[in-house]
Image (tube, rainbow, N blue to C red; front, side, top):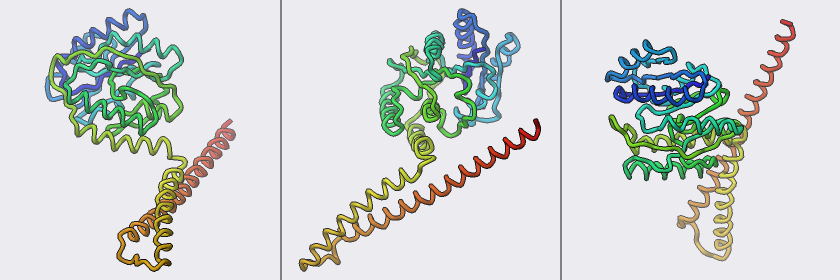
Length: 312
C-alpha cells in the first residue's frame, strides 16, 4: 500500500481537487493507496470537507488535531497513522503536483530510501525564493547533505525511514538529513511547482531563522552525538593554540623590555586559552557521558537477550 500524508491548515478550497488528483494518479499505478489528511487545527471549513470525503470514499483517513501544533507535529501524526510500505508527503495548497508521484516512486525502485522533490522553477514571490535559496545553501554547507531543496513538501519514503523518527519544532524540514545520518540512501529529482490558487502562504523569514537553529541541533546530534570531543575538542584546541601563540609573542617582547600589562592583546590571549581549555574539558565530559550511556544500552541489550532465552 502507498500512504499519502497531507498536512493542512485552512485549505478547505483545495482539498476536493487535491484528493481527486491524487486518486487519479495512483489509480493509474494499479497500487492500493490511502490518503491521510491531518487537520492541524483549521478554523475554516476544512474539517467539514474532510468528513464528507471520509464518508464518500474508503481510502481517506482523517486525523484532527485539537489546535495548531505546527507542520512537524502534523506530519508525525500522519506517519503514525499511515499503514503503507511507501509513504508520500504532499502539501495541501495544490502547489505540489500529484502527477509527480510516479517519478518519486520510480526513483525509490532504483534502490533509494527517500526521494525528495526539487522545485527547479518556483511559483513563489521573489523574497521567498531568495530566503529559500539562502537557507538551502546554508543547510547543505552545515549538514554536508547536498540537496537543492530540502524543504520541498513533495517526498517519498520507505516506511522504515520514518520508524523511530521524532519530529518537533521545524525538524520536518530536515527529514532527508536525519535519514542520511541514519544511513539511508537519499536522492532528489526535479518536480513541477504550481502557482497558489487559494489562500495565502504562512511562511515568513522568521521560520527560516527558527529552522536554522534546528539545523544546528540536527547537525550536532547527527555528526557528533557519539563523538562530542571531536567538535568541542577541535574548536578548543584551535582557540587554545591561537591564545598560546599570542601569549608566546607577548612573553618574547616582554623579555625584550616592552610593557604588555595594558595591551588588549594580553586579555585576548588569556581569554582564548581559558575558553579553549573549557571547551576541551566540556568535550571530555561529554565523551564520558556518552560512554556511560552506551554501556547502559549494551547492558540492557544483554538483559533482553537473557530474558528472551529464559522465555524460550
